[in-house]
Image 1: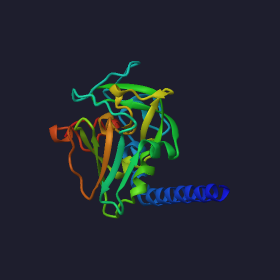
Image 2 (image 1 turned 60 degrees about the horizontal axis):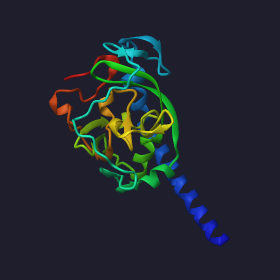
Image 3 (image 1 turned 90 degrees about the vertical axis):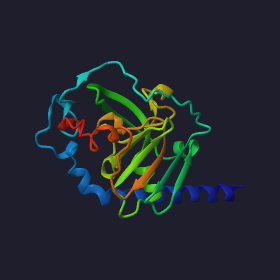
Image 4 (image 1 turned 120 degrees about the vertical axis):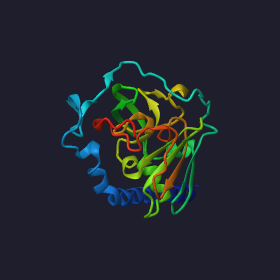
Length: 239
């Protein structure tokens, strides 16, 4: 019995080590691109209010504060249980990955507070989250050297494209908990992506798949005239 437990513990330690090493390798590869992204390097950001920890104004240009958390979607609200939920990571990767809910919860969990900027001009600040860094998830699949972007797919048919260096940032999470409670279905539960350094439409609700791409490809709103890059402090809403 003890030998079996020891073997299981060793396997878990080896798995954790692989995840950590794969993530560090991926982060080193994109370090320069992340640091030079507009939300971290813009010398003349457009906005007002106190600065966030990246030195950007808390309120990007054209935004107003809200205490409520408005609900926006395509008119479809999938009801996906944690028992049936899975996440697929494929495309330009060395090995495809499929994770169930238990495997997501078994990964290192991150607690963070960040702001949420909707392209429809409202911003909700200081929101409390718990989830898994998207960089950890992508590292599991080992993106190929030629991978540059990710297409995010949701259970309601929604898609959005994001540059890989944006999804690798430490505050980009696959979240399952908001303010200490499970994320509700209307806000994308059981799990959604948040992208605090981009407009919120880049964070897909009801996430089910990350497809690694070797070139940019527009998602749902991008096909309808929204920006591919979505940088709030440059008023980067539309093409």
